[in-house]
Image (cartoon, rainbow, N blue to C red; front, side, top):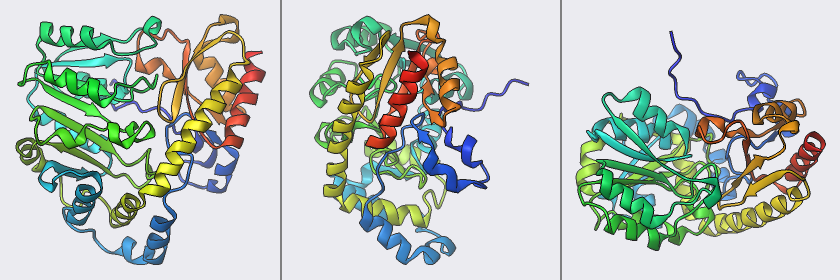
Length: 370
């Protein structure tokens, strides 16, 4: 029987430390740039509070519906509580949201984060799925007028974008996203996944617009920007009507006690994270500058804590072969093939890490692609 579980790249570090964490001490020897986990630690204030109350957080059930976390999101992100749902990461939210929107015609981007395509092809029934192709000749950017024209021509029930988009990191600013929403039918639901937007600028988020635009839904993950990937915290913001409709499908205790403590303290410590987001941008620029010395590759720098690399020299091997050779050096990058049929075994996505790890990745790539 065909395995139809959602495919999610990354996780190469577990090839070294084991999924049973038997060799967890080896994690320091791994350059895990295949997933997009943050290179920096969570807020020291968040870690200090959890450490102080670790035993309590492990043995005590969390607030049933996470009301305190909702209040913190409302306060620090400027969104009314009635417009918020929380859950154990954005993936949990996606699997609760889309089956209950009753959409029959869906438009997504190509390339884009693969779990969306999985849901519309393997989880939901009778979905007519179409794609707006982002082309390499356009640096995989959305052409706003062309995109709006396609939406108005095909009239989908639901449009989904990731902004900045993975794997190329292309980004539409708040003004352009707002113009798109204002230019399409009000009955068309428009979903924006903003997992990486704070790496650009928190002010570019459209999450505060949901109270005035009833067809807008914003999916937020606290994994990548707050360095809480292992804690699993995410939220959706949407109109109160949509929230009431979806909230019934969120089970009690959606976020663990430890994760709620971490998330609330992280939201309070915005200055710490602003510094790390700015530093990530600088690290990405330095990383890419070093890689430009390698011939026969093309780099799509984009925004966020990652970038896309096209392998132009077929003699160096396919993306799969390059990824395999790197893994033998405990360097893990993402073969991007599963994200688009356009990639033809020639693209890898690389996450930005700390300076030393980035240098290790550069050295390994130079050795393999020389």
